[in-house]
Length: 185
Image 1 (cartoon, rainbow, N blue to C red):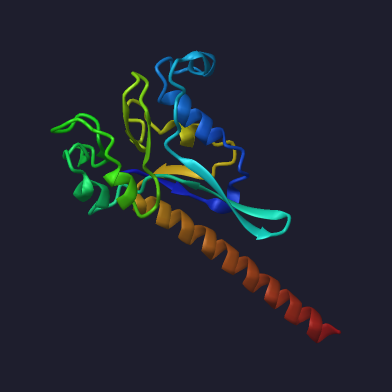
Image 2: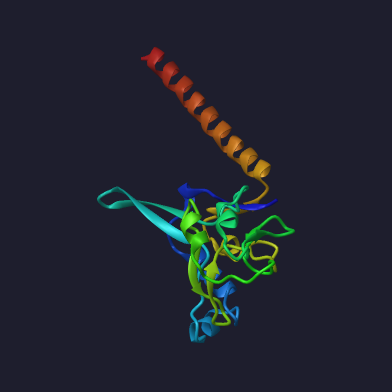
């Protein structure tokens, strides 16, 4: 199953992904319309900033990991939270409706579930659904830096190995050049 993977070194913290997510989960599906809706749209991913130094922050997009096993499914009292046929963890379209009890919010180890208002005004648990009506989630499509990727796990790991191999090769070449230069001096 494809998942959202993060390359935090590319994230600038622009929050384009948060905005795109909120708009995608609005009734109108457009920015102007979403701002005018009676219940403001709520993003399903968050940009978190962690201080590296007094003037520098490490920014990372955080989103649901669709865990397996999923603690939110186990904690859901009305059994609204479930794993869908597409392997995503969701509380929409299940055996029972979400009652906004907050058990899933408390049990999520990453803090990726929030209580909020759905576009139709119902208070419920809100979480990433990987935008099932789109070929790629809105957040991934909106990221100007390519910090978010929608890939199979093996493809992400392969890309990461390629980047690491390139970095190691470059470092090795630089080391050899430095050694040759030192010997010539």
